[in-house]
Structure formats: C-alpha cells, structure tokens
Length: 272
Image 1 (cartoon, rainbow, N blue to C red):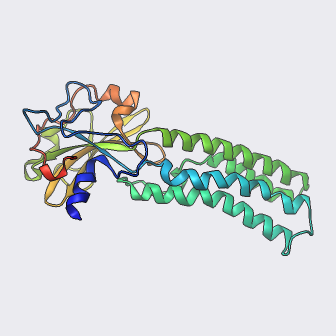
Image 2: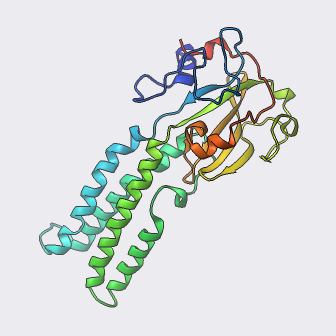
Image 3: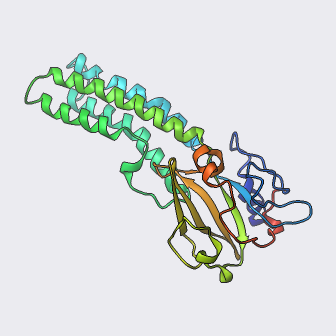
C-alpha cells in the first residue's frame, strides 16, 4: 500500500483529471538552467502534482446560485412556505454562500500552505460586506433597500466566481529537490533577494520571495526518511500553484535560486 502511494506521490492519483503527466526522466517546463533528472543523473528538480482545486469546488459552486436565487422566493411570495418567510430566506441564503466557503476552506487546508484565515479566501468580501450593511439598513430606512442588497449579493457572487475560476485554472503543484538536510544552510544555498525564515532546514517555510502574483516559497518537505526543498507559488488567496506556470513568477525564477545540486531521487518515489 505504501509503495503504491509513493509511486503516486509526484504524479498524483489517476482520478485527478487534467493532472500533469511526468516521467522519471523529469520532462518539465523548468527553465533550461534548472537541473532536472536525466538518463545520466537522477539528481534535480521534479514536479509534484497536487489535487486540482476544481475537483472539489465545481459541484457545490454549481448549486450555490440556485440557493441564492430561491432566497428571494419567500420574500417575493410571502406566506407560502411552511415556516417563517424570513427564516426560510435566511436558510437558503446561508446555504448559497456556505457551498462556496466550506469547500474552499477545506481544499486549501489540505494543501501545503500556512495561510488559514477565512478572509483571504477568493470571495468578493468588499461587495459582500456592502450588501450586508445595506441589508441591515433596509429594516430601519426602506424595504426597497433589501432588493438593492440582494442585487449586490449577486454582483458579489459573480465576482467571486471569477476569482475562483482564476484559482482553478492555475495549476496546483510544486517542485521538489531531495537534499541532505543536515548540510543545509539557507544563507549559503539560496540566492540573494529572498527573505530567509530559517537558516537551517525545517519542515515548514524556509524562505520567501514576493512577486506580483503572490509569494514564492521555499519549504522543507519530508517523505519517510527523505528530506526535500520545495518551491511553490502561494497566491493571494493562499492556494498553492506551480510557480513556473505563472509568467511573473517564471521571470523571477529564470535562474536557479537554490545553490545546491541535491541528492539522487529515491527510486521508490519516481513514477512508474
């Protein structure tokens, strides 16, 4: 069981649609100056495909607008539901947004990222907050403000959909290099310009580099008794993306950033 999981650790599970296929020869989209395994050497960077975000978010996202739409039904056609109209509408409204927030939070939590705050999730929080404020005022000023609030919630939903689409279309992945963790020193092995978080190898953030698309991170990763350095792009919403698939990050990474040739890749981890 463990052996089969090791074989899929880099390439991802067979059921992940659109997953990047990668052979043990290390075919990749890395810049040519970055070292990758070849027939002559088994050292270098290899890509790890992470679970695509779309697999878990598309189904609840498809149902979310339905519940937001029927939120207005008890209010437009009062006294036709078995329970209080306000409670029914509030229930539909809550479900419509929880179908977005809960899957996003759980998906991000399953990724190798330190970002956990809810307010960083890809949701149009400013418009959502404005709509909520106007909804609160409609009770004291005029009922028509309630419909204005409802319209703003729809604007927030479509804006949120666009933000989620951007996350889904960005490949979820990172690049790994096997290293001798006892010999690692960040100041000696990382190019200048990075903000060093830890001088020595640790199973967590080691260094970060800011870019227009988020933050490129070097992180310590373990698999069994093996130790790695990973490089990934953490987007503004905290999701993990392949840094070489992003034009801004790729420009910053045109030259190798880790001055360490690494160790040979464990054969058990190479895709069959």
